[in-house]
Figure 1 (cartoon, rainbow, N blue to C red):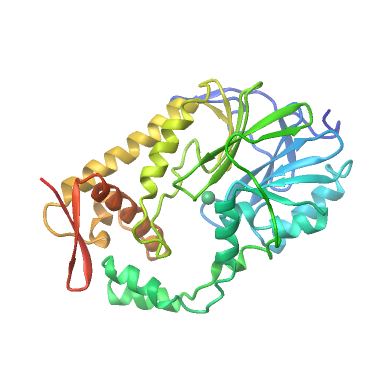
Figure 2: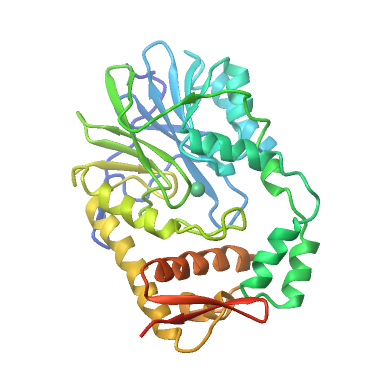
Length: 357
Ligand SMILES: [Zn+2]
């Protein structure tokens, strides 16, 4: 059922930190495709960040391709797509387009591809509407609530000036205009693609309703950012919902992931396909629990989120990482507060946290 021009990736199993990578560190070059299971194609698109790539997955639907995730909405990525669609994928059209979550590296070209292919975007309701809302936020400078959020969490005046100087509205720049409508995916939905049935599995914490696809017959999970082998997905509180407790959602999702079979081949959005679903879910959970313990220890006196960063990360935080790091810190602090392990108070207009002994 696969196009003959597309090579199967050679098996070269390698073990690292309790996980097995069936293809070792091999990966397709940006803009090329390789087969990881019959009719399941892996392709990579470049990202202009420290994390320099995203994995996308193409499922052979017989007379069409079903695509999972799209790459960032940049001309360079669209060029790769044009080459692929005119080259190795030319035999059949994209007939389905599924997006795991609202982050620009995943949904960036969804609008463009949906229009080019004439298909309906499929994702969860939470991801679709958050993407639409953020894409409308084209203000050139951060809204006052955003500045107030970081001030309240202990940023210094120079850091707040830097935030304003850096500008705003970056989301819309990384996402091509989104389709005006979508098809909602919900937990337990079954997508019949080619000879396979894929079940929709929804997680949360990294994003509101992150879509994963699980094929029970062959035990393959298209995991998006919900389970990555070597990096930990960002779990953050944002000024859009300052009281949120995304870490509770994230830990609940990690526990629920372990209801899927351990021998599942996990196809993550970053790094390489791996085996060891339960082991990896447990590693990530343990990592958060260690951070929570360190953090609770450090909250002996009233402490702002900004002041916890050296404790939480164990290294200096660069200015460019400050927003994400603060979001992570607030996520861990809000979890401690929700568990009754810490208290939050206002002190001179700032939030301070203190452990409950
Ligand atoms: Zn993401």
